[in-house]
Length: 92
Image 1 (cartoon, helix red, strand yellow):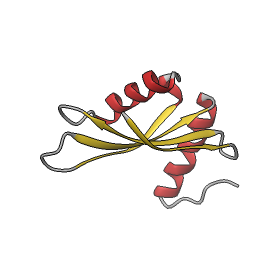
Image 2 (cartoon, helix red, strand yellow; image 1 turned 90 degrees about the vertical axis):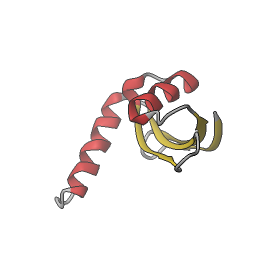
Image 3 (cartoon, rainbow, N blue to C red; image 1 turned 180 degrees about the vertical axis):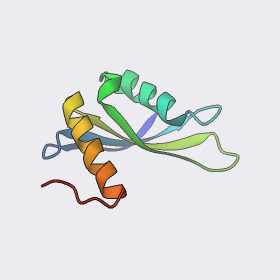
Image 4 (cartoon, rainbow, N blue to C red; image 1 turned 30 degrees about the vertical axis):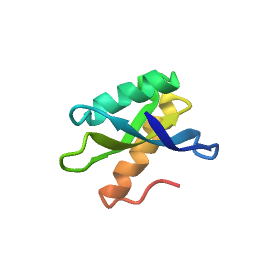
């Protein structure tokens, strides 16, 4: 695992990480979440994987994830993202 970006976002109560992994097949969101949990020693319920990108024929994948300080902060953020994507204005 090669970490490319590791930022602590105190305003949103999360740690934003991006890293490159070498894996036989696409690890998917569940596998990437487990890898983040093991490497950063954070509970898996506090992790939201945003993206897993790979290129055809390559065994390397770029993973972007957020590690929240608590499960409540993660759930609150997920609700805001879902409302925004569905065209409903998020609550202020």
